[in-house]
Length: 283
Image (cartoon, rainbow, N blue to C red; front, top):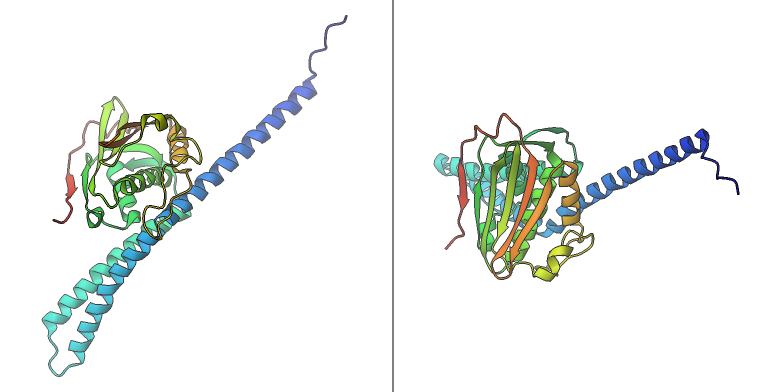
């Protein structure tokens, strides 16, 4: 019985070409899925964003009306007019910042570069729109001001936004605290933590939370979406493509912490100062 002939050079070249094309198609599908999930993330909180915009428009209209009434009167009150216009301007400016942050995330205009972690968190909170303390959730942010990572700004913002949305939904209606920390854990590695004091994740579900389409959420509030079940799977994929990793720790009845590990910027990891942003719920 004769030995099988080795594949010809032409066959090998054809096989490699097919494998290369398949890989390109997979990469394109992964990119499309990430973009779709980014828009779905905004859709998940669309009702919250709409509600906050209505809250911002109300004082804009009211204060503008007061200013106009006074200006048209026989004795314009310039102090009242200036105060009213200042209030209206502040609300309009905040609405503009929310729009800018949302559009930046939706467009996906980004590049792989040096990124300030504090800036990432600020942008994600701006897209979230609603101040957590309005839902009885204390916000605590502990991030060295100069701490930086290398990455895609929009994709990393997408990860943080997903983790914040999950934390908010875990505590909605019950209150609690959302803590966001960042620190250097070893040379040139940065750890970003997002911690909630929600109900926690049962041990039997911990191995499933990064699986596509798996979700433990129902509709969290009237008109708020339950999401796609792809958020954490996409987060894991994004972080791994940044040569990092994401690890979850949870205890039922006490809360959940997502730990995101990313390559840091060597020049920033030792020189950070520590400004503290802390927002407590209204009593």
